[in-house]
Length: 486
Image (cartoon, rainbow, N blue to C red; front, side):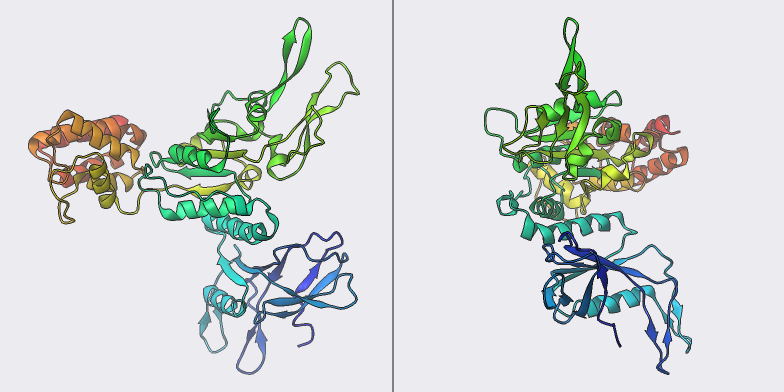
């Protein structure tokens, strides 16, 4: 068909096109050689070339597309058209309706089947080909990381020097894929992270571990700066602003971000502060652009230059210009359990970070066993068939509110401190039940504040059954849970 190989047109007059995205709408060839067009189906297909195409014009065509060779034709300002290798192809499902399409013979074709067929066709060559479903927020992060890896291999001069962050032996339960995603993001040149998830999953500890490994500050000062989000923060605290310098004098004083621009910054509990307001001037820097602050170098001189933030340091920087050092990174944590009640992170802020969810360990029983071994609390050789009452309680709690490992670890330590004879891989004895209920109230309960009354009753019943609590212990458990219920 004439023009079938021309996928679309690009504006490459400035030679910056390294990624071309096109709207893809399907036709279905029927048995009688006619065509039908599912009106609600569409995709976005992206061709990534790894590096910008040669300078062209404002209306260059990409033609002669060959998925088998992973090539496309491009002319630009050259005398003749040449074939350009496609390094990565992304097929992005859209949020449009995905109702099945009914063929004339009564059969149904699904959007997912069509996606699989397109993916198979686009994957027939050597280009890395991926499918993404944007209805899953984690897929949006994956697009960024995959494209970053594609472009980073060609353009990020620091990629080969990027540290390889190995799993920390102190961070039990953080899956290996979390470290894979962190390393992929760093190699792609994206060093700013938001670790989010339920309470107690080790987000802050992971942020500190990553900060220690992502920079090279030396031995004479701290490897990173840790800040805890506060609703009282202002832009003056983090970026800077005018402050008194003495009798009758005012001047610009850099905030903690600019003072510590040479090392990783950790912001713990990010959503407890109005982050868009307090680091607004850094938005441009996070995107690789320079920006001017609203503060003059000489307050009294209307013609005085303004302080500026540059995306990268250079030898010609003026004294009134600030730029992040090569070790700078923003690593933030966000507790999703109370995110709806706290300050929200805008979409503009969101897309400047790699978001990584730190969830509950996949295997709670194995986690509890590993922690018992680490704490030297095992009373006998391990057997998978043995009871695991702490893992059982943790699983029950997560059915109502997802919680990380911290309360489970605290439970083991506290209960063992009260009664060192407790066997945590045995059914709780009557004497142990009292300790378990008290330890549960001291570790898990504070993180369950605000659960509903029905949830409290159901959780109490489930815990009583799992631990085979006596009537008195069961009543005590339910009472403590109802004290927290709304």
